[in-house]
Amino acid sequence: MKDKKQIIAVGGGGFTHNEDNDLDQFFLDQISKENCSIGFLPTASNDDTKKTELFYKRFKNTNFKVSHFDLVSKVQGFENWISNLDAVYVGGGNTKFMLDLWKRNNLFNIFKEVYNAGIILSGVSAGAACWFDYFLTDSDGPGFKPLRGIGLISGSFTPHYSDAKRADKYRENINNVILPSGIALDDGVAVLFIDGKPTEVYSSRESHNAYFVDQNKQLNLKEYIKVNNER
Image (tube, rainbow, N blue to C red):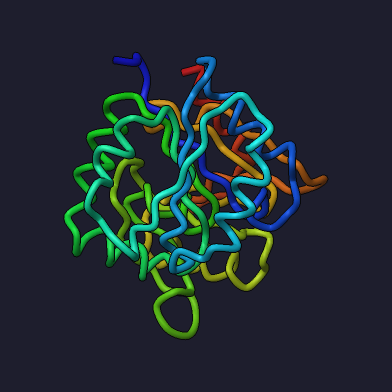
């Protein structure tokens, strides 16, 4: 069993958008073993074959074994598939649709078990938001609304924080105690969480950052990490 639990959250972009190649490399750099297996879950995009093709295109020339699983089509065999990976990458799309499907098929505990076993969980947008207690989303009808995630990381989250309307709504929800304090990621930004705590920020785009947001302040996440590490 590996000695740390890791989640990599990506705010937006990456291989599913044919950009930010170095952002994908940040994900790969966290996998310390050689000849590793990485898997892709396109659930949030209703198993969109185009996103799956982009996954294979991006990672086929690496030293990693790559595979994917179409959960919309079938669930049988999923636990065995994910348990034999070193890392899984969850694509973006409709977060509510994805979580409803996972919950309906009793998959939450499987994700928790592989996380505790040391398999790296990661993803972009919906695939990042799902790991938190709560997140802000536009996948539940018009406008931005708070929803509950799996709860592997405490607090709240929003991707696409570089979208001004989303950023305003996220801060408003926190100020009104609709959402707890949390972490916001611009597009092109990834954050590594170890044992539920943010430990490293990587940005592939100039002036795009990650932030810690509470009722009193918005703090650059790199500064937040530094301050908390000094305690």
